[in-house]
Length: 286
Image (cartoon, rainbow, N blue to C red; front, side):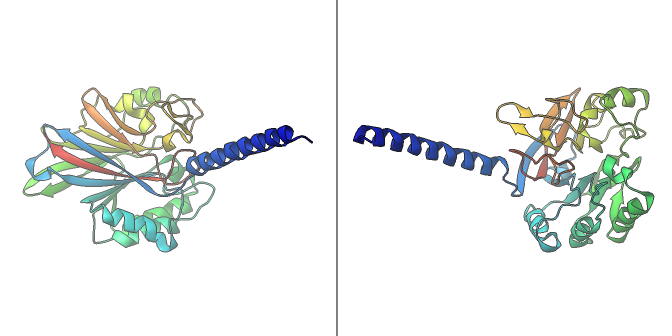
């Protein structure tokens, strides 16, 4: 073998190793599952002065996932954000895992410290009645206000905002908007007030945005499961490709919506370029 041939083989091997290393690094970041925080500063003309700077942390789509023993990593991260309230937008349970303890650990950590509000997601309602009862008992034990077609008044500095919530709908399929157009949610905004709606399914936004809420906080879409750089989410829970409303801020008909990518995973496909997420929303008076 000549010297020139050896050099050529070494060069090819070097290129192969460099490419392999680059692929390994890309795979590491694509599948990186360290807990992240997305922050949103939202402005509203009708927000009461007393709520200027009000901080909301959204927890969504836990799917029985754990972050450290006793949810310590998750709870420490939430506490560091110094929220005024916690909102849970569904799918804390998972129809396959059936483990309510991660939710119990989370709620127990903040009971009596930070007000907590919740709505149901499809997985919460898909489990057996006895399993759903466990979730209800956890919420009751730790003081989580479950909004199932009702509203909670939040008062601060003598002023009030309204937090509404509705159960996940019985319908399953791609036409959630059509279903909700024919079967509207039962809650309506309070007139001449600031109104927030908690609702599990972000893909229902076209049916929700015309109802007059100032802000909708939703989940369900898991960030599109696989997030393609410069493109967004790849697939919805009902298998539509390149769906709308997968993560972040959306505005329609004067209503703003925040969509959390969620914390857990409900399918066998891993989350790619889509690490678990907490959302911090800060309300500002414009």
